[in-house]
Image (cartoon, rainbow, N blue to C red; front, side):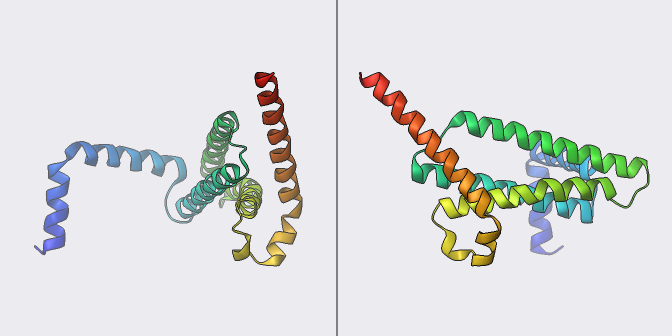
Length: 165
């Protein structure tokens, strides 16, 4: 047995709890989203969600509009979207469709997520890495996020003014 395989086997036996949790988690993911192209698509979508959260957090820290309530609602929204994608995948399996429902919902949830992430990247000050054509395409999302941030800043200003007086 080569060293890498020996280390892997030792790790499996050294921590059976981690192995059991990992096996159970992979079983759930396999049931929810399958393997192959659907699993790849959902992993790309999950990566997009993470990038949206990271860029949104950086943007809100930059302009001082951090709001835990908005972040918590975003977590519920993502859980709902992942649930819809799970149901769409299972409908495709039940009706023996070639990923029609799953693809439809994935594209229709993914595009706004991509727009949001790109607008957050712009607000965070990282826009120098984004092509101008992409920025023009998401200009309305950038304007919407800037307006919401300005509203939040005004609300915070009014709140602190009331506490001081």
